[in-house]
Length: 325
Ligand code: BDR
Ligand code: CA
Image (tube, rainbow, N blue to C red; front, side):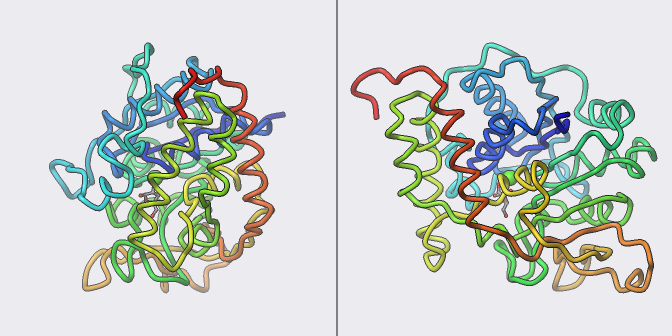
């Protein structure tokens, strides 16, 4: 039986790679996408998700708009650094046809809560942006906190952050929401920078997509090359771009890709380290551990799976018009 999955995306470039990883995974059945803000606004992210689903032949997957800004804020504006990394349109200035489908009118929170009630532990929720919508689902229904299986991209425990020396981007957008998730959800796997920065994509791999000569291959290569170029400026020591969000989806398909530490997590909400993910000292000796923090990754096997799945998916899209590559 395939594992049902919901992705909560702020559809920038690595979210795009996460979405396509899910579509290319025979073990996973994507039952819906919820849209959060972060790399882009909710509107732009939802539009990107719809357009990507159509491009790769899955127009029936429903997309639900989520909450548009952090719990402690009244509005959201895309940060300059996010625009630099993901492009103005969130997909590295790659152009995609306007989607013909529209977002659903039911809210993302309702969809999340109803899905956990309907499918229980047959479902995995993979948030790859700020935790605001997931936190709202926890508050909306105690059943959600008790039964949701969450594999989230966010945080950094054993390595420095990427937006501040102690804070990772998704957590930093809404520390209160992430803290609520860590304190109340009973089954959270944290796929943080500890492991995602060990998973790198280079232009050697994106050329394989470009060489397919399909619209899907061209799109993936164009978006990923933009991301790789941004990483050459922000993190030249890495030698590629981090495959943050797709690794969380890969772990939903195959948990043996990572090795985890069982603990209880929290986020610092005040003081100079606001936004830091760390073990909750008040629950250190509790026999119940609600979080698994990924600390090691089989990056070679992950990259092989990543390339195989996305290449197969992209190969099945229509041929590119001549002259466009
Ligand atoms: C995370 O921040 C976003 O920019 C990426 O999409 C990823 O989810 C990495 O810190
Ligand atoms: Ca993301």
